[in-house]
Amino acid sequence: MNQATAPVRNYWRIAGVTLAFIWFFFGGIGHFVLTKTFVSVVPPYVPYPLEMVYFTGVCEIAGALALLYQPLRRIAGLCLIALAICVTPVHIQMLIEAEKYKALGSILLWVRLIIQPIFIWIIWWSTKPTERPSAS
Image (cartoon, rainbow, N blue to C red; front, side, top):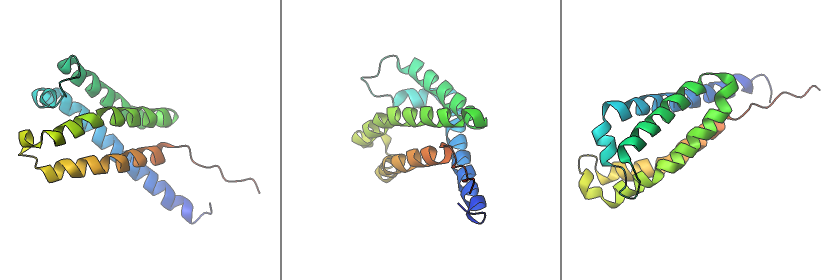
């Protein structure tokens, strides 16, 4: 990597971390502010829906905050990726039961499901360790 590409690459990493922070921090807060709404979308096969909403809210907030601390950024990114994968069944369930979520619309439900792997890649890429320049 040369000097010209380093700042651009860093800018995109910062943008990715910022996006992940905003998404998970405010999403986590949503678990406590809009608790009934979040509980209503928990699939029926998930036990203790209220507790699960609180637990995932805490995980989202903690993960988002850990993104801000460089030594924890990679592990936070990996944990948030795992969390995003774990909640994907909720998005699938909402799509299956799209008639219950007419206010969101099936297009938004599809877009969210399609964007999920892209968002996971953004988290992975923006939190992975940077390459060290060679000593040559």
